[in-house]
Length: 166
Image 1 (cartoon, rainbow, N blue to C red):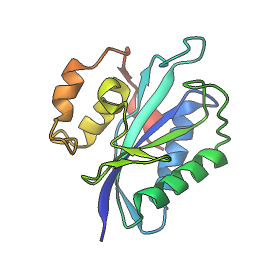
Image 2 (cartoon, rainbow, N blue to C red; image 1 turned 180 degrees about the horizontal axis):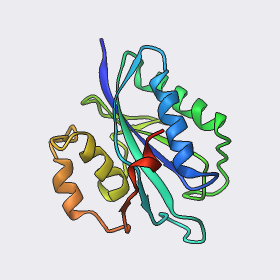
Image 3 (cartoon, rainbow, N blue to C red; image 1 turned 45 degrees about the vertical axis):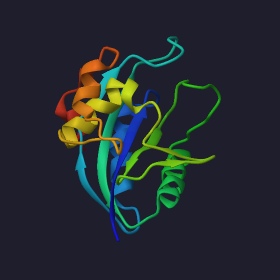
Image 4 (cartoon, rainbow, N blue to C red; image 1 turned 30 degrees about the horizontal axis):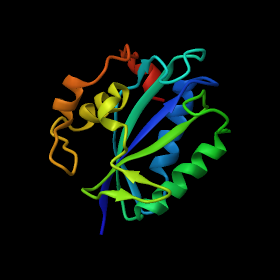
């Protein structure tokens, strides 16, 4: 059985757009997983400490036979391969991969919360997801388009296509 999963990508260190492009290729090569679509990339102000570079963000839609926790393990492995270090909450990073949605599942345990808890508050997450699927809804029935209309402005800027496709 396969599930549609959405993964958010973010980076603000070491050529962020290139980090995301590499990560998309790595996600496309995961076992029992197919990359269905990739959003454009966006730049935005950092959440949390402001003394860091702007972020580049995007999202992908995958179909996968992996469980949510298996997918999370792969995401964390890709982050580590990109030199991800966790020194500061909401601090700068080479790569951040978040499992945003996993089918219609709601998961809340010590390792994983799906849908991602901050999804409704992040324009840099909502907009790429809407680009992938404008009709997308959370498991509780809230439409992402409605959440986006109410979301705080994080100075989201669409990047040129060459920055998001390699």
